[in-house]
Amino acid sequence: QVQLVESGGGLVQPGGSLRLSCAASGTIFSIYDMGWYRQAPGKQRELVARITRAGSINYPDSVKGRFTISRDNSKNTVYLQMNSLKPEDTAVYYCNAKVSTTDLLTRNYWGQGTQVTVSS
Image (cartoon, rainbow, N blue to C red; front, side, top):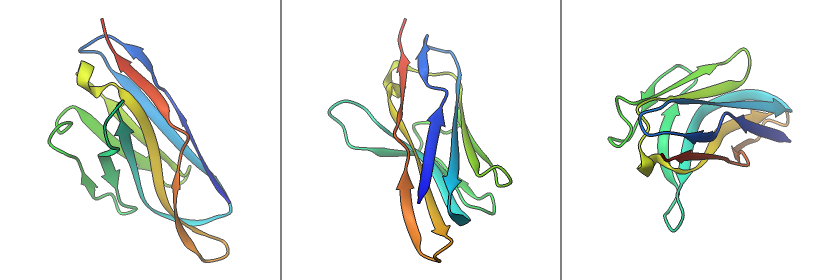
């Protein structure tokens, strides 16, 4: 099995910054895409950023220029640096990873979520 553990959420004022981390552990053979999604109350879960193993990245327009995703393949960890935060960024942020495990099956895994609240 694979576990994704997120950290770094919290309360921040508008214009502030936060850095989220997500570490994968377990019976990992290889990790392909890793990404961050978010879900605000009453809304659908949406993509925030995604990065392939090779480093190709995509962002929606809503966060482009403010958020930066990166990963450390040696640590099976993905990061999300969030700058110039806005109240509309308030949501639960979820880590996601496409993982091939030692039984050579590839599955999609989710973290438990971390709350990000942007408020004065």
